[in-house]
Image (cartoon, rainbow, N blue to C red; front, side, top):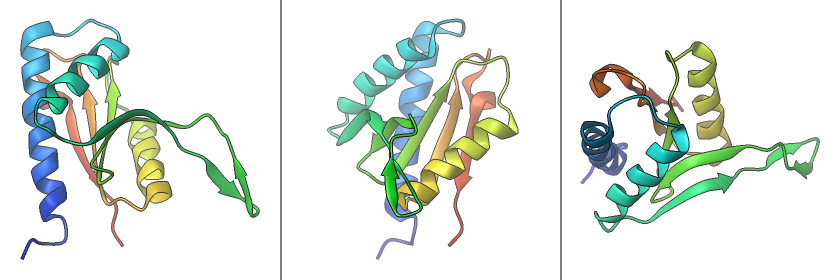
Length: 130
């Protein structure tokens, strides 16, 4: 039997492997949207169900509101990939991913910053405790 995050961990490993391939081919310095398209392509070659730019409404005061939130990549509706092409990752980026995890009921997300010389320095695993 898989652990609580067993499937999610397997998906996250696939995402990291694919992010390494994309970063190795393209390097840093491109727009986030380019990395998103390329990473989605790599992930789709793994026969995974994924969605990009997923509209995520906010329920406030019993009303569903479109607050402009969009998930970059949602793998199997279990793992969220939040992509950046920033000088550095900030606490705000991590808070954004935590909010997405709360709103979707998911527990695991990866914050991936492609604008680094070594992609391993641009990947943060974010787990929402229940």
